[in-house]
Image (cartoon, rainbow, N blue to C red; front, side, top):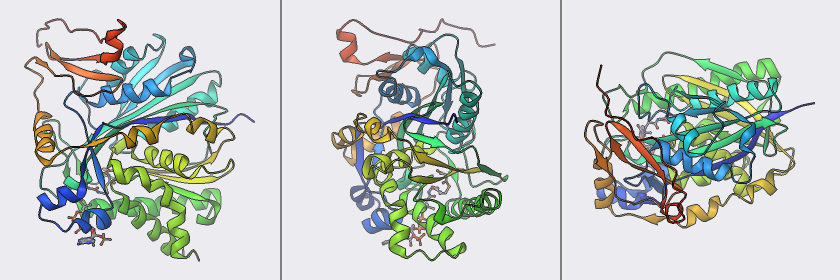
Length: 409
Ligand code: CAA
């Protein structure tokens, strides 16, 4: 039987991070609140010349090493840090990565759950056309106000996934459930750079959505918590996954001991703890963390819960494929994370301030990131992207189109 799922999964995170103990001291908060209560040790901070496009292209660049690009006929980009109200960020990435002009290329939005919506649509596409592949990119900069309760739950990064028939990494079961409810727990109006959030309420709605999803999932599939070996959760902060998984076990009256409950999620928390929230990518970085750090055997069953404020949630499951460990070994995630460098509090505040920019003035950003792609600046209200220095030296500069000086209608 033809299966469908994640053939390959890579992620990119910025080179710099802020140490959470240092941030706690700056905020006059007990560091144990950030480290244990929220469950974050480091938080990714994007360079001045990085945004959702450059991060997404950098993740995609790694994904497509040694892959046949000609079979990709769809590029779906999920984000809640959109840079344009009209043009899809996916189009810049499509150009930077040299994908076929025949692709359907689009951007999707529903807070943190649009990465999952993109995945579910991509799966149906490859089930109907098993000779084709879809690239899903989930890319975000999680941003709250300085000194607000949300501040320690920021982060940045991008995930890129190749979705195909007969996948080498994770086969995804066709059964899934979704849950939608109109709530105002977290949102970002068009004229704001930072999200508005009712933090404690958002946690309640997350748990409610999980409960509702499980109720329907177990009714329709007959599965119980014991049907799965491991669980991955959308992770705005790692303690949220613990809260959710503990709640589930309690509510379903499983006889799992606390140690067993912890084992079911422990490996999935490792990366998010040192990256922070990546919104649409967060669930898939949790999956990468589980695969890279635990090397689960082929056949391991994983329950996946996706939550996007506003809200839409989804519950689905996957089975580790035969070639998973040989694929994940080649991806270099540990090296990328280990080579990162901390920045000072002053540098963090400076970078935070520089992100609040209008599109109306031209900008040329200094070279800061060493990622495969960078956001070079703004010209005639359009963003310019380019392949980074090493490639420029070899004369293979790939740049997105420089906009003509247009007239506002
Ligand atoms: N030592 C150890 N633990 C401590 C501590 C200390 N000194 N002080 C407090 N804690 C614990 C608290 O007991 C609490 O744990 P429990 O929930 O298990 O009781 C935890 O640290 C957090 O403390 P508070 O609840 O007092 O924290 P807060 O109100 O200042 O902020 C937050 C927490 C509401 C999550 C806030 O960071 C926030 O608003 N974040 C953004 C919104 C968010 O992430 N929501 C999650 C669901 S929505 C979603 O998932 C979508 C998304 O990606 C945004």
